[in-house]
Every structure is written in C-alpha cells, then in structure tokens.
Length: 149
Image: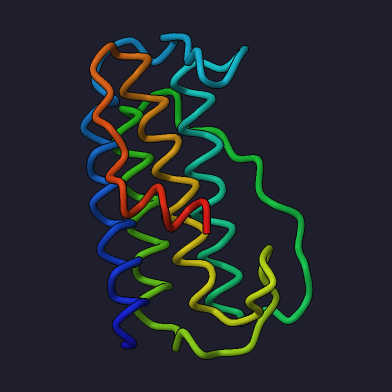
C-alpha cells in the first residue's frame, strides 16, 4: 500500500471512530453546519456515501453511478449503522489496489482517490456532528491543508 494511501486510510478510520463516538444521544439533534439536517440526516448522508464509494471500489467502476440515499435503521442505534457503513468502506479500500483505474469525483481517476475524498468529507461531517453535540474537536492542520490542496 503506497504511503499516501496508508495515511488517508488511517485518517478515514480515525475520523470515522470519532464520528461514531459522537452519535449517542438524541438522533434528532439539529446540525447547524448542515441547515435542516438532524444527526440522523448527517449519518444517512455520510453512511450512504461510504457505502456508495465501497461499491464503486469493489466494482472498479469506470462509469459514474448516482450516489446512494440510504437511511439508517430506525430500530438500531445510529452509531451501529454508521460503523457498519465505515467498515464496508474500509474493507473495500483495503482490498482494492489504489492504482486501479476507475471513475471518481476528482481529477484523479484511480481507486486511491476515493480514500482521500472520503477522508475529507468525513472530517468535515465529524466536526459538524461534534459541534451539534457542543464539543467539536478542531480539524488537524495537516488535514485541513490537504483538504484545501
């Protein structure tokens, strides 16, 4: 696994665990960084995006595919559904060569671009969820710089 890919994979796992740890409590809590969204809506977005990217990676899809719009199981804890989504993405990331050519949402049309893009999106939404709970941890400067790059 190339060093950069390893860094993004670790980043994705860290931020995913931080998001999951924030999901205890009222799932209807509003998320001010995403007007009109509750924590359930935020988790639905992030988890759907993880599952969509995981399927794209497993297929090494050369063609665009519409993102998923899934909803967490209302009878299960939000963190449980989210962790299952994250695990699917991490497994797909681990089993797909990052140099595999495929469609992505960035100019980098290789599988490794998904890990970086997912890490960026997840970091922002981890902060959104923590902020909604009143205890947002800052985004690490090197991660913020990478996102801007």
